[in-house]
Length: 596
Image 1 (cartoon, rainbow, N blue to C red):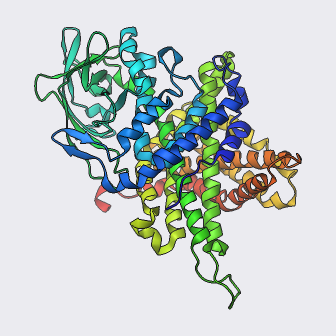
Image 2 (tube, rainbow, N blue to C red; image 1 turned 90 degrees about the vertical axis):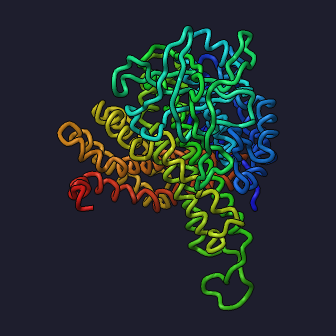
Image 3 (cartoon, rainbow, N blue to C red; image 1 turned 180 degrees about the vertical axis):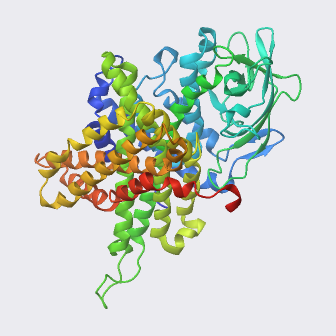
């Protein structure tokens, strides 16, 4: 089994040269955070991941979480690892310093999350959801709720979950039936929630559930949903853990992957009712929960990147050590490791190129989020918010879809050995598969992209980004003849994205079903071209840095070669996606229900 090592060089490059970390650190509130501090944080996170989290990934997958009489026990070593995790302060990395957080930029927190996900996604899901709960409470909780819950959540002494789904209500939250009845200064909840990640476990002192439910006089549909804090243990007046609340784990799911992460069915109010506290106002719960969901969607995109990176490292290690056959054209001589074979090189390069593109794009979205929150110029704040709104469904949808593809390619590099669990390659594919479903499927992300993000604003932000992409033509031309094909492919890909975007804008008002029918191909088109954009920028920066005699030329030349591969092997897919978008909706809608 290979050992995970955080790709610090490429993370540093993506943060500083593509996402523009220097601009982020210049924002108000980040005055005491330096580039050197960020580098030290990433290096220490890499060490923690390598020494503490990665060694538990395989054993956790093999043994899984266990349920006994309503009590869930994490796999061996996880509780101790979590104690080390919160003792080191990792849980509050990007949280508000007023409540014990370290206040680092979200861009940096995303990079650290990538490291955790590469090393052990099952473990990482617990603190990732806690950070989402903190985000929702930060925006919508009362001062009293903030004082009781946020410091403990920030420290990681308490963990958090999101409770949306019910047996009859998956993505359609208008069908939520969990009831919340007022009782004095709180509410009593009764109902069942399913698919609750880390909904019960033995790692933290308390678990804080954010639960969607309906009050007795709530209107029908999504307008009648409220949000409640329902702790596993009801806090005492002094903030300490009190009596056990009426919420119980009745089962955990048997899943394809992420076996170490318990996915729970939670029953609320089998007895006297589960005590809950209303967040904000009644009937605005879905609005509040979307604060957490949008935060989590970027986090799930990072999961796709982290697993893709881990699958790539695993495949690369195998290719460097697996001896099989001779080099093409050689009938005698020593057999070679499979990395010498051209098709294996092609597969590894496709993995490497996609991971680097996903990473740079996600960090760019993180930087836009930091600017949207903190930039002193209102115009820049609005521009950054529009960009992060546009990129969020792309990072979530495209990065997870590519994460599955990269993990699948990793299995292919292993050949038949990849299909055998003992080599470990299959786990990354099994774990990655949930990411395209978490926090809204790819189809939901794609409809959000074409509807709320492109059609609603008549393509304004998308077209602005397209113009930024076109501005790279002259710098790409300066890279020389080796990049002629890459430059041509990039131009053609931008043209395809523009044509498809204009089609979406023109068609949405008159035929929204047609646009929905090709929304996923449009998302994949946008992701592929946006990936080409950050890779083109990477090549331009790398070429300029090669002029410095003190530069790491091996890394920089590899960066340019990888960017060229992306343009020549992945960007040509853009034309096919655009053709599907513009001409393919009628065939999707051609059959009625009985004809399937």
